[in-house]
Image (cartoon, rainbow, N blue to C red; front, side, top):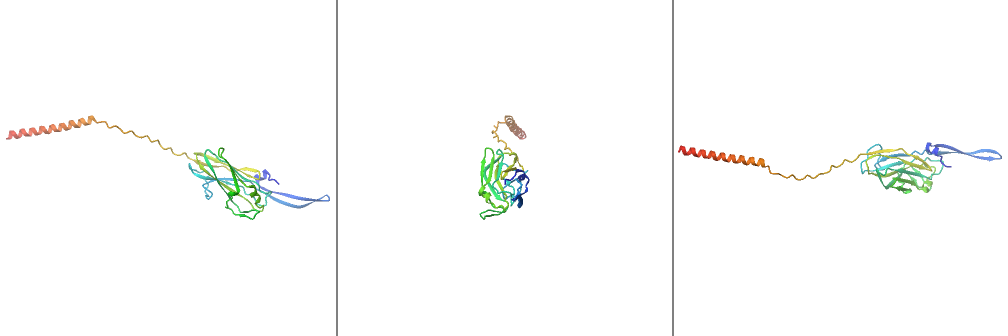
Amino acid sequence: MTVKKELGQTGGKYENTAYQVDFGMAYVTETAVNNVPKIEPKKDVVIDHLSKESLDGKEVKMNQTFNYKLVGSLVPKDRSEQLFEYKFSDDYDETHDEYQGVYQVFATVDFETSDGQKFKAGDELTKFTSQVVDKAKGKVDISFDGAFLKSILETSEFQAEVYLQMTRIQSGAVENTYYHTVNGVEVVSNTVVTQTPEEPKTPEEHPQQPERSLPSTGEQASAELLLAGLTMGSLATGLLYSKRKKKEA
């Protein structure tokens, strides 16, 4: 049975009842209750997968490396159908963010697969995924392998999160939203916003030309006149003193 888009967006349960007809009489044989997950993706911004601090609404510095955190929907156990698609599509702003294809995927709940593998919350699941990147359009798709998804026991719930490593390359306000698809039902996440201030401009250096030291002719002439005056005064005083000495003699 295919998951209905309406139930995928709201979540809930539906009953599937089987009937057996004997000699024109209908008998109820079994009623199965099926859980349909509410596809509710969440988006955040963090430094890395170990960081708990959200950068949503905060500042990201120029050339800083950070991660967009894409949290997938929780798929409940005893679900209505086998899980065959679990996909993350991020249309990032390529004019402000640079993506070099580095990403990681982690489980957020415990689950088990049909081959007996037991996974714990926090286990890395990157090797069970693949990505398609279009750098020119700023788009990246992360998808789980279909065979891996189908191996997850229906008695186990499932949820995963993706970390996309980015580098901020342009100042301004940057918005980011992603689309999450579960078994053909696509739902959009919340939008995160970060701010990057412009880098202060370095003032241009203008080398100063060495100033020519012009001779201060006026000051030099005044000094020479003063020196000459003092010399003449000394000579006059000496002559006067000499004449007085002669008269006294």
